[in-house]
Image (tube, one colour):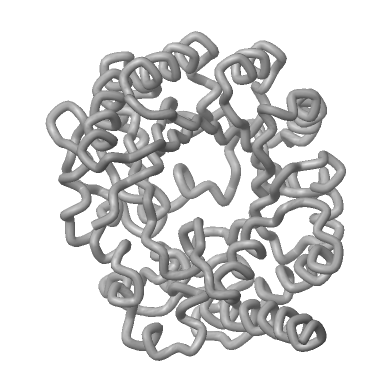
Length: 371
């Protein structure tokens, strides 16, 4: 089994926003309430040692550590600086660090720290001010757009730090206007994410079992604006193009490449993809802990093996599908049904099929024209 190459480290377990779609706080998994607010220096040290052990055991040439939460900047500059220093002093290969933040705390002190440490910053922002403030609000209900915009203006002056933007799709928003509003911040890459949902708790606008494709139509509108003139990278489209042209995907939820990600919670618990917990708290739990268990122990767990076994880990219906190599069954969390587990297609199956067909037809037409 391929080793883990991306380690998601939950440096802080709370958030200063109350986004209504958040899979950490608003969906099925409420274990955050009993976990430490922040990762202790002792757990940081154990995690770094376990990463180093994994690197040596598998002869890895480099790894990525994602500083995550909650809101990771709540840990503070000193704690984040100490964490990066600890990992780089222990792990015997280059460690690429990224931090995913809501940016409300992203000030010049953080930016200068991340610039000095070589940490890339991804920011969550949902497009126009109205779209953003509909979902990404503070606990008192006020919007966070103004603070995020100010942070992004500062981030643009640190191009070596600027990692990109992450936008959750809301089919109630105009897709092209959303895309163009993100371009105003000159992002090096944009990620469009489907809101998390499943067969038991369908995402907004997605009726489980319906043949309607609202999310595909939204993404197709963005693709058709992006494809003739790709002024920035859009990860979902790039990954789809890669697999449709015979390559592999580098992201979970597209293609059949195994996920290389593992999660360490603030208390040191080792977990599978934390997105799985949006369906059921038990779905991501492994029972492992960095103080006593190597990451290799997670590689052998049935739940992890099922998520990393390509087509063999998909439902029979998915394996028969003509676009399974591009779709990969979608995100595993989106296949869940209460009482029946993950042995079914994604709740987004019609959307994925429609989107892939559209992208493939555009590419096929261009290749035919070139030929």
